Length: 144
Image (cartoon, rainbow, N blue to C red; front, side):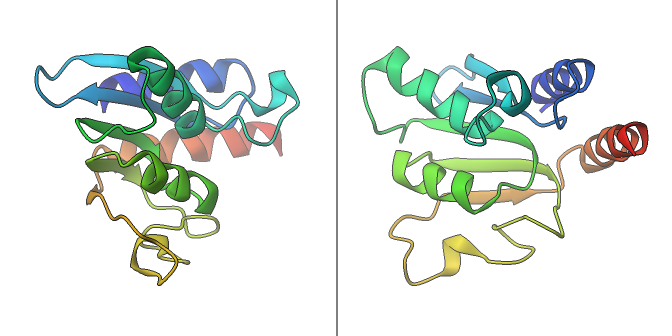
């Protein structure tokens, strides 16, 4: 999660919403990809940290299924990212801060508990949550 937080810091410095993600090989515990939100630079609402990381990981291993990998993300994933996590079949999801506005894991929509979800990763929340929360708070304080 510390590496995901570093990615969130990079996003913060680029005036992107500070969310970072890393995907880890479960067998050797090595990070295979890391990313951060990049919607502003790319002018594309799809460039969330999770989507970028999943795309890069699938390209790296030449597979759409990431069942031997875990994702660490600094903020509770939104509905789009939760669906991408399910479709790519990541084994475990670790996230930091909850997102009371857009979170779709445990805060609002609860995508993985819905009837439309066909795959549910193991979910672990609250990892370094205060660090993630403070970074988000500082970012939105700065832009308002």
